[in-house]
Each structure stands twice: as C-alpha cells, then as structure tokens.
Image (cartoon, rainbow, N blue to C red; front, side, top):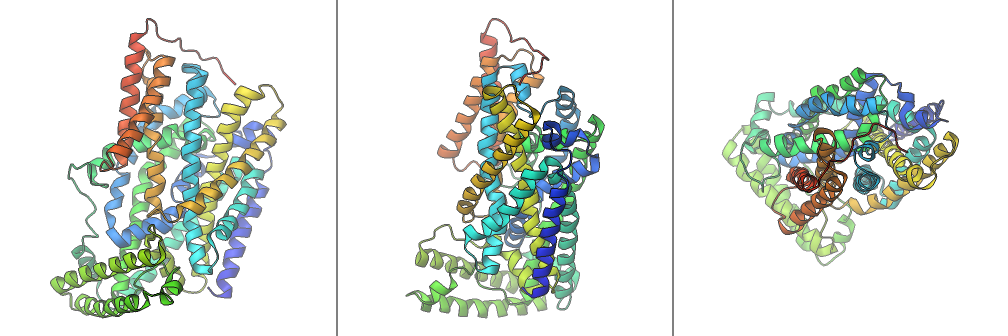
Length: 557
C-alpha cells in the first residue's frame, strides 16, 4: 500500500473512534448505555442491523465464495424476508412492550430463573465464539498485506473497538454502523466498476456472463432436496428460515438493536429494511466475487492467493515440485485466457477444470510441506485484488472499510455480551440492588473481558475455511434450540418451566449428536432439528405435568 492509502486508513479509523467516544453522552444510566434510551430512529436501527451482518467476514469471505463457487451461497438468505415479517408481527411488539433489556429476561417471567440462565449462557458461548471469527477475517487480510503476525493484527483491530464500545455503549456502536454501511456499499460499487472496466477491455459484458455461466458460477438456485448439499433452495427456505428466526428473534446482539428503537412501529420498520435490502446486497458481494473470477481470466492470478508460506516452500525440499506446479499453472492460464477471448466454451471449461486441479495439488503440497492441514486461500481472494489492482486511495478506503466493518459488527456483539452478562447473571444472581452508575461500570468491565476473550478465539479461527460459513456453523449449534424455547414461551400456553428447561437441554444434545454422528447433514438443518426437538420434548414433559405454569407479567431482575 502507498502512503496515501495509509493516510486514508488512519484518518477513517481515527474518525470512527473519535465519533464513538463523542457518542458517550447520556450513557451514565443503564438505559442509555445498553439501549440508547430507546431513542434511535428506525433507519439507523435498520442500518445497524444490516451492518452487523455485513461485517468484515462478509467482505472478505463471501467474495471469496463468489470467486470459487459463484452465486449459490445467496440461497442461504432465502428464508430471511419471511423471517423478518414473522418477527415484526410477533417478537418485536412482544419484547418492546415487555420493556426488557435482554430477550432472556422474559424466559424467567414465563418459566423460571434456571431456564433464563441456561438460554443466556448458550447465547454467551455461541456469540463469543462467532465474534472471534468476525474478528479473524480482517486479521487474515492485514496479516497478509502487512506481513504482521496474526496476534498483532488481531490486537490492532480489537483495541480501538474495545475502547469506543466500552466508553460509548450501544449508541456509539449504532452510529458507527450507519457510517460503515455507506462506506462498504460505496467501496463494493467502486470495486465492481473497476472489475467491469478491466473485463470489458477484453470481452463484452455478455461474453463475460457466458464465461461465468460456463463454470456454473451463475447457477444461483438449486431445487434439489438433499440434506448433504449445503446450499439449496430448501436448505435456505427451511433451515435458513429457522436460523434467521433464531438469530433475529433470540440472539441478544440483534434483539438489543431493535429494542433501541423509538417505538414498536419503528422497530418493525428497521427489520423490514433487512427483508427488502439484504438479498440484493448479498448478490452485489457474491457478484463481485464472480467478477473477480472473470477478471483473472485475462490477468494472471497467483496460483495460491494465500502466500504466507511461499518463502518456506521456496527453501524446502518441495521447492522443485512447487516450481513445476507454478510452470504448469502459468501455461494452463494462458490456454484458458486464449479460449476465453475466443469464447470457445468447450476448451475454456476443460482448461478451467485443469487449472482447478493444479491449484488443488498446490494446496495439498503446501499442507504436506508445512504440516498445516487447515491451509486455505478462500479468504485471501478479494484482499489480493484490492491491494494489487485497485487505484491509490481506494485501496486505503477498502482496507479501512474492512477494519471498521469488523469493529462495528464486533462492537455491537460486545455490547450484547456485556448486557447479557450483567442483566442475566450479575444483577439477577449476585448484586441485585445497586445504582445505575455501578451497573454501567461493571458493564464496561464485562465489555473489556469479552473483547479480550474474542481476541483469543480470533487467533484460532483464521484457518478454519470460509469464515462466513464458520461463523454460521458456530451459531447453528445453539440457535435452533434457543428458538425452540422461545416458541414454547410465546406460542404455547401449556408449556411449563420443567418442559422448557429439559426441552432446551434435549435440543442442544440432539444437535450435538447429529453434528458428531451424522456429519453429512449440513449445518443449516441443525437449526430446524434443535427447534423441533425442544418443542416436542418440552411439550411432552409439560403435558405430563398436572398444571401449566402461571404466566406472570411482573418484572424480574
């Protein structure tokens, strides 16, 4: 990166941190610190909700998926619009009227303290793990760009984020998210323009689509009914629906966002914004990855985008074999480029298949030479394009956007982790009657703790494959079971505390059993399995009891 790019990065991050600190006014009370005094407009809440999803993981990893596999990942979000409509009609008015700080408070009103505590604990474990993955994505980028070690890059991102989140609370997080959404969308549109400009120097737009389609990258919808296939129309509409219902209806990091809205109607509008906008935005990002693939048909790409082991390979006993693969790769790239320019589909597809085979051999060689079996390069594709092909200034803007995307998404999750820790455990079980100032101070300490914890997780997550898949795989272990217990609480009057508690345990046990013993069932279906088991077991135990629990609207600590 050039000096201008570094100025852009430092200036942008500095502006975000300073503005976050400025937002600390009015956060000396619990309501102000954790819920922004329930005063945010719907559009700010809506952008904040989407910014949490459009994190650095999305920019770095989803574009890589688009490059490697095309548009098929968009099916993951097919259940989102329906989920948002359902939640807008049910959960949003329910939690808003209840005047809760966390979603799990209501579980004690409806059931008992142990059900609330177990649900909140599951959220804390799942969200803290996912937060580490969210932080790992930009750390991967910067470690490759700067040559820093992973721990250094993780801390470079975490420290500013912990500072402004700890001081400014949810209000600082929300307004950071608003700015971030505009910058990310602008940056992605700029990348698309640059990609198209480079591609159209060689072929027409129609030919570019033809080439992408020839490799299956424009095949966005798969109606196959197959539990072993990760992304299909049905896994997105059914498994994805349950995941989105769980995420936006039961995950405190999302519930807390719409609890900051001024009214029920504004909270509903904030969710419906995602229902209409999320899939087009996801197509923009995946489409950018597809365009990167087409761009590199006419520009020589690296054989492997992750170059961290290149020096070690060059000075190892595998150097000759690796050099031979690079020579074969360069020759095949030339054949593929010529076929693409002639629009010779058969030769192009055959050459692309051989190119992928050479890449696979190179990955296997790196894994064998280094002993790193988790080595992959999907998360390095788009960062490589940014740093080597985008103009001066835009490089800095995109790198800064990746930095701050991680900070803004992670800041909201940090605030939610602190809220659940203090409201569901500290204030409920330990210090039940203290001043607002005391709870705000302890919330800030909890924010720092979870921030440091997530840094440790981030250092372990970078080598686990596509990070957008990793973060959703983590969430799918707990989300379905959490959704099941809220279905029992809100939609079934006969459900009892015992049924809810043991149903929640049964749901988690079922998901873990399926994940371990039936690994061919893809993770999206874990959400459906968890929810169904919780409801079935919970209602079976409830009906076996003589009387249902009494529902109370009395507040709890």
